[in-house]
Image (cartoon, rainbow, N blue to C red):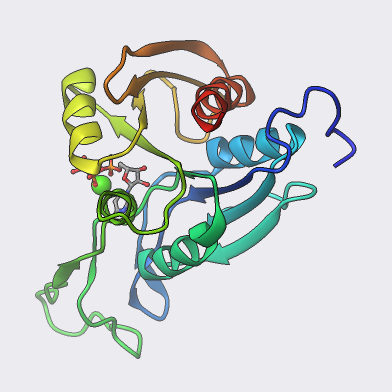
Length: 227
Ligand code: CTP
Ligand code: CA
């Protein structure tokens, strides 16, 4: 990268970032989705590349141009995102799961468009998706080859810090970046604010500011764990 120079503290590092939100097919024209724009994940990828890292960005349904110098893998569903992330982390130093992954998917997506025949809609039966972040943590705990640093994101609407701490422990990751949803923050906006929960450490407060700035703090915390 032309940006990789003296300040390239991630030079020689391989990192994986997931971004955007998964879509789970109901039928050929409809899906279950979420409000993630991909902006924060793209900021993470851009900033890592600018600091010299070799970046794979697994992007789920993001309408943003590919960041320069970043290897972009486009996916749609949680199952596709899982396969792409597991594939990409094979020789990575760090992985950041910024994507919003659907917790459930329709058991059997219809092969043809559902018509509104009859008065009562048919129920859509759901099944659980794999938890990719928890799987990354479990693989590491089991002593399998793993990125050294595993980072999760969490958007919470209430009991933000308590929910975040429980989630950090449950997922077995090193850092959990917790957003408060609402107040025009997070989804689709250029700004973000967050608290980074550190496993076995203290929380780091990131005040409201551009998503690139938040990405910079997250990479600072990751870089400190890679030395
Ligand atoms: N995540 C994942 N796979 C899933 C669901 C979530 O890898 N099936 C990751 C997200 O990318 C994020 C982190 O886990 O980095 C937290 O996601 P979140 O939805 O907040 O956590 P959940 O465990 O799904 O809990 P909740 O019940 O609050 O949705
Ligand atoms: Ca979830």
